[in-house]
Image (tube, rainbow, N blue to C red; front, side, top):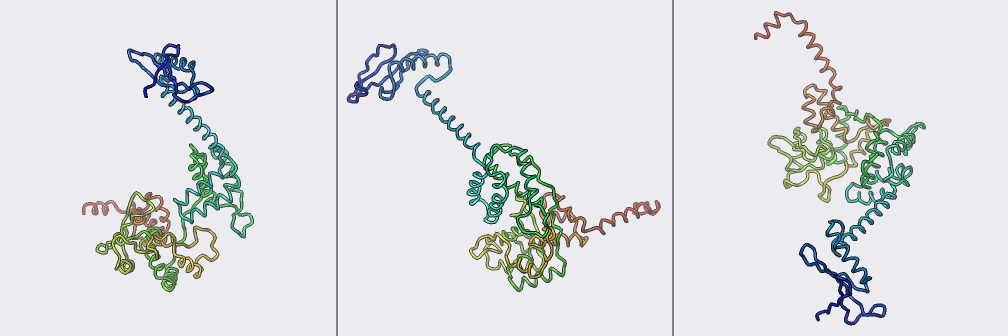
Length: 414
């Protein structure tokens, strides 16, 4: 049914009645405006009386649209006005959300971060981070709005925790948190602030205490013999994994992620792809003992299958508990508190590097390639284990300096 438009008495404003609906005792009306701009006729419906539109509103809307079209400023149609209103509303909601976000505390973000971490971090790491939050972050910064923290706040926090005693018992009553622990606490706090969306995070501006965390312990040959004899007695898998770490210098994760297709039995090479330095792979080489183990472990496996899978066929996450029980039984850590000197699974890799350097037959450069160190400075920590070889350079220089010129010339001629 066609509607019958009626003039409102105002230029460019007209309306029609709703066939049945009434509003405040009178028939409901629908208003529309029309005008001409640059030779183009524009007509636009506005809305019903029951929606709040009046003749006066329609007159004002028409005048505003014409003015805005001529000046190029502001909305020139009802649709544009609605879009502008939606944008204003969205901006208002965004600002309110930002205000609420600024009020959200470190503790609240910490809880949300830990929920997120369930899908992204291992159980062990999440457990450590939760304990860190409980003991330090929530206790001293938990009620502070995360977005309000400044560099000075972080410095004060670092000073505060550096004065605390370790959570675990120690005979030293004056013991304080180690620099390594303080660094870990600041790292967890930084992760929470990153999750919170804090820009220019203050934790990145505060330096953690300097410390030497380089592993100093390596096994003697006698300790290795005892360790592997005991491991073989307790668990063949734990023994085999440890042998791979010792004789090829592999990290625990590199042992766990090894697959049959990474082992080239013709050349004796093992390709390490899931290394700490993810951007590069490296090659290590089998000893006769490692070759025998890998042949036995992969005999019935398909190329893509793991060499050391779990019972469920998945990749192993943690070092076999048998290894640590054997370490304890042999008392290899008895009386040693400094973590740099305590024996662990990584000590096998450190022993590999230390023995090769002490042999005098492997250079630091070659060792860097075998270990997969990105920076030669990391490998240089082993340089002190070859003092005699380095001292030889002074002897060689002395011989060259004091060599008679004639003899030197004869050698050059040859």
